[in-house]
Length: 220
Ligand code: G6P
Ligand code: MG
Image (cartoon, rainbow, N blue to C red; front, side, top):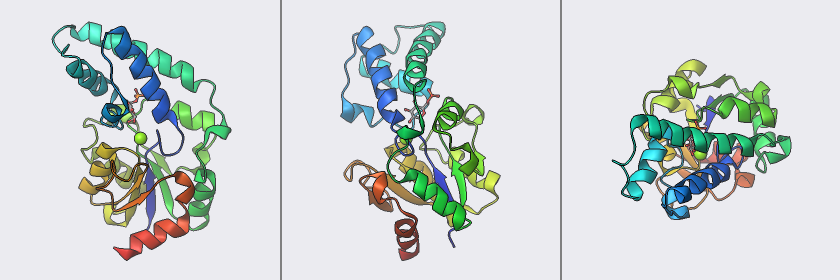
C-alpha cells in the first residue's frame, strides 16, 4: 500500500539542477575544464565535494589541489549557487508540483524530502512549501552519496513508513539507483534514455499526478 512519496529536490520540485550546472560549469571553466550536459548527468544527485572530485578527475587535475584548496573551490561554486537561488519565488515550482503536494496531503500520503543539498532548506523556504513536508532529511547528517540508499532510508525511517510502501521521485541516475537500493518504487522525471532504470518514467513534472503515481505503483 502506498503510504509515502519521497521527493528529490533539485530538478524535481524546482529547476535548481540547472543552477547547479551553471555554477559548476563556471568554476570548471576557470580551471580550464570543459564539460557538457551529458557529463553533468553524472553530477546530479551527487554531493558538493564529490561533484568537485568528478570534475577535477575529468580534467585530469585530481592531484593538483590540496584539501584546503578543494574546500575553497567548492565554497566558490556554492557562493555562485547561493546567488542564483536568492531570487527564487513560488513561481519557480515546476509544473504540477503544488497540485501534487496538495493532493498527497488530501489522500493522507506522507511527504518526505531526500535531497543531498545543504541548500535544500533555503530552497524550500524560497518556494514556500515547507508546510507540505512531513519530514526533510538533513543532508549534513548523511554519510553516503546517492546511489547509496542511506538518504531515502533515512526519510522512510523519519516518516515511520516501510520502504516497500514508499515511492521515490528523482531526476538523477544516481537517485533512481538509490531509490531502488532502498527497495522503493522509483519514478524518474526527465530523459527516458538517461533514466531507463526507473520503474516508471515521466518526461516532465506536469505528468506527475497523484493518479499516475497510484496507477504506476499498483501495476508492479
Ligand atoms: C543535489 C544536486 C547536486 C548537488 C548536491 C549538493 O544532489 O542534485 O547537483 O551537487 O545536491 O548540493 P549542495 O547545495 O549541498 O552543494
Ligand atoms: Mg535532482
